[in-house]
Length: 326
Length: 261
Image 1 (tube, each protein chain N blue to C red):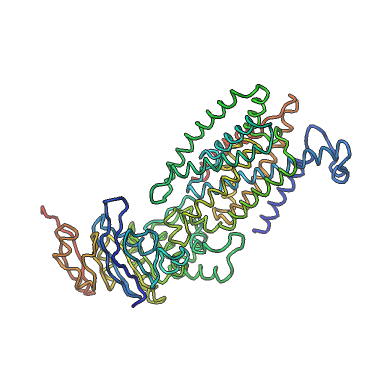
Image 2: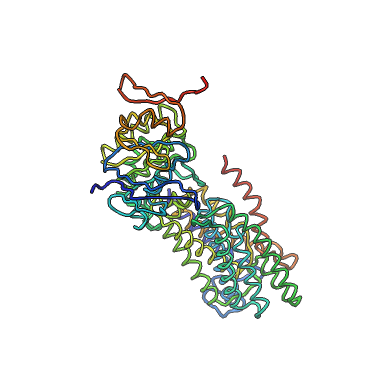
């Protein structure tokens, strides 16, 4: 049974990747493009445009779902998400500062977004941990909500000092689009290294993460150094969040919807939820990106993929929530 | 000396100037079956968490099996003493098997559990008579079944000391007896030290050999016959009390009495 499941999963990944490589405003011959990288338009569009975008969609979608899974376990709450607890907001502020001070896009965006995610995570953690090192989950969730509003205000403040053109670019980036930002392939590689190494670490700790989802003291009773694991998981998940925001802005709901859907199939064991979230998050974002690329061709525009994931994710999330309560 | 539980001058408070436990000095020998009773706020759960090394005392030392519980790595401590919480609470619908397998927190997440680990988990579930339900979701079980799953997980943990926090809370008489019988069997088969903290006194009194009365200090510690005395109990629980003896099994029982009546 689990073997069929693995084949089905890999099949979905391959299908999503192929669709993303094949479909777009310019129709290309994939076979020709694959072996003739310099051919116009097939090779150039495939290697210069669609390949990095597809890989990025897979990485970012997977990363968002993995970060969501990690935060949900840590906060013992299946509704937690990097976006909701304010880590994405911190990363967005960092990225916007980079866009204000430096050319846009630049390597400063991921660097400052990572810093922003790190700083906001640290602040959220400090504000939500009591004197004996216990994490007060509700404080954290509430602080996150407030922090998001504050981050939104900071971003609008920064935008007011930008030139109109730059302001539109920054806003487009923040809305969550895989198209606005054209990173070099080495930057995609860098994002991949960060996201995948954080994922590998989380998967390594998946059994301890199962325990910490039951609470700090219960995890300690089972033999987990809970305080340390909390910090490690926070760092790993906020690194992923920082990178995703730097590359594609604020894409909500992937971190909630994908782990939820995965759990309905695999059950809540994190040794399964983490790898499946990585794969299915990638598939979800890749397919969403194909839809926004094609859906608005008539109007000569592209919908930011974050708008699409929110449109699909919002209702789907409500449905999943009702479904999971039987 | 022995390899049981030792408290040396242990004091603990959650907040400054609000001490919960004062200067605890006692030892419980290996293989003991002990019930700890006391009023609300006596520090019973706190004592268990100190013994498990989950809480760190402000003063004194806690040893289990000769090891200082709050100075050794968590994983090692959890193999010496297993704290069993009063209720099973989970945000996610784990299966009985998944829940019991959580004791393997040290294994990397990418490798599945080996055959021996799986066999050990099923064996532990069999000991609490939950093996047939191993694919059920823990959130859908009755309170009694959930207690048994928590117990099975503690067995998988492999600790030689079980620290049970209110193992009988929310259970009817039949299930409460069943949990105590399972504990008694486990203790015998695996040579465990079993410590029960409980508000329900009479059911544990039929099983335990040693009783501790706790009210922020150790009021009394010893065989039930010596500890369950009228003046001590009346003072500790601050209530009028009747101590009787069950004629069929010769065990003591206590009943609180209405002073106005």
